[in-house]
Length: 229
Image (tube, rainbow, N blue to C red; front, side, top):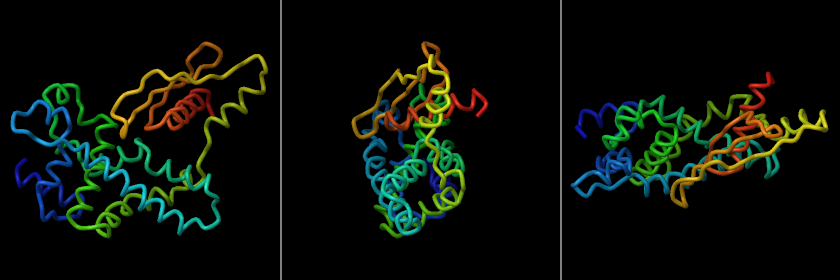
């Protein structure tokens, strides 16, 4: 990656790396590392670390700013703030897709726009900043994006879409709702799940996430939208 490209990205994330190799690795997808003959490292290890740093910073922030919320609601709020969809949006704001190092196959299949790849890259960037500048710099970067999301009323008042859907369906006792796991992929520390929600035997919504619960919530949300709620 050219220094000019790194400078552009550093402008976007408002952080200048002392060790440029860290940000290069954060932007290296496993497909590129596997395809490269130069023994390149992928961003998977950084993503693992970044996920933990992100969880700590967000947990600390909502714990201090939501003193009235019980543990269960804190967990739901945190999940909504660090889900794949939210992290993907952050990456798009930073134009991370323009800087990713992908294999030819991933490039041709528009991997630089894939939500899972963009979300993972965001977590890897967090780890790169943490290793290069420490926790305070990583926290500053994370909160620049998390605070506006936190202040969004729709996220503060987290909706349990599964319960909402179940309550609607229960009005007609002949109808039943079920959730079917359609796909599970990725390493143990970075699983991705895809779920279908079915009304009787008909698929009425699909969703994905880093846990089966998150995928089910997203499937229920899509079903509600399609039903006009």
